View 1 (tube, each protein chain N blue to C red):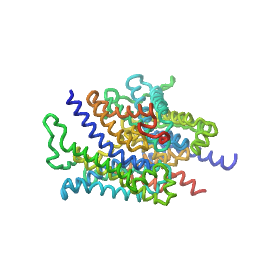
View 2 (cartoon, chains in turn blue, yellow):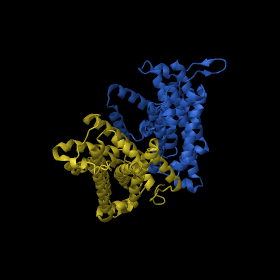
View 3 (cartoon, one colour):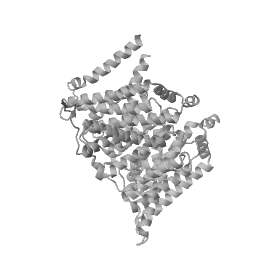
View 4 (spheres, rainbow over the protein chains, first blue to last red):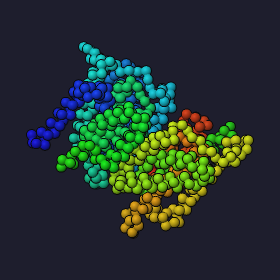
Length: 317
Length: 289
């Protein structure tokens, strides 16, 4: 093992240790376990957005739609179909991912700002559906009347409903699965191709890479991840909110990715942690928290465009 | 039935006229500077509230004349300080910045003027309906449509015949060459931005007279304006004009038959256009990729 590899292994070990021990160090610092769970889920969503934004280089500004679809998929499953947490997760993931796969075919030919515009507009379609179809989705009030279920392992049941710590570890386990999948894909030849498209699309095309198909696959994969994160979020809150599909939620996700560092794998998780904690704090001390969040956007763009991790990496180099 | 139909088509045309004003401004900025201005709805709100504030002193007509240029001046300052550093960077950044700006404007107006809706008084003779049968056609509605028509005509004349307009159109096609010909591109972008914000301010004043003012009103108009641009064809201003009217009338008509779908229908139209004619109705091949 050379020095670089050792360094990476240490960083990775530190990240996972921090995450595994989060319930134990967050509470003494004035946080609460549910906050850690929320950071984890929203961080997963931000990492899914960044899977597309940071590693394929196409700007989707409507990803909240697939997040929200995941949440509704999970919620509706628990409410009407079956009292099973794993099934709810699968249903949410499929709903978000499949909708993304279908719309992706209409979107992938656009680039840059136009890609962003079309993704925003399509995302709003799902927002309106969730908002208007009150008989199924609860409309403006959101979908209520379901709750996450204990997980039955045959020999014993894991109670994730009343024990905040158990639920945190369950979410962490799900998080690890998806993050592992993401890392695996990014290391594969396909992942390298995604990065090649980001770096130089025209050259990739000349090398014979079917760029549109690759972007479509990357878009679809990130929608599946997003749906999964959304399904987890419905379990966190026992509630699905139409505003979770709105483009302003997409903006939050993109902001988390940018604030943490788009070019790094773990950056969005850090961004999500900072964003969630900051929002939690600001909304508890002032009614004008919207202004401060807006100001945060402006300041990050003007002075911190490479994000926290990008900043650290550059000042070290 | 005919009257209901006429009522909703008129409504659609009027709301479409708002979409057109908003979307033309957005389109101008998008075409020349490659910036999606999320704060465009915010500038509309600023225009409306400026009109509300100065109406007691100089009357409705004074506000109509003065509020749009004042909004444009605010727009110029924002462009100079916040947006100019971002030209040439990934469009992601200007998008995020204007997104944050929209938050700040919405919250700021709520802070200054309060969350309750504010009425703007319009001249009495404009508030009268024209006849009892056509009760929904008030003088003010006709007046709004007329103002929008004049503004759009002036905009197209400006772009067609003035030096500034010709430069804007040339810059839209090939900014590098325009810069190489010795034209101050920064100045061009600023002026173009100001023209776009002027239109947003104008729609703000008009909307204030019709709907009253709320801090959130701009956000609601933003998404249809996006769709007007996409349907009409990105890069084409006549396309934006047609797109705005089209989606306005379409949602008006849908309100007759299926009220719940009147907002969804414009998204369906967008999907159909993207499926059958990806460049939009008037768009040029390759503009969207």
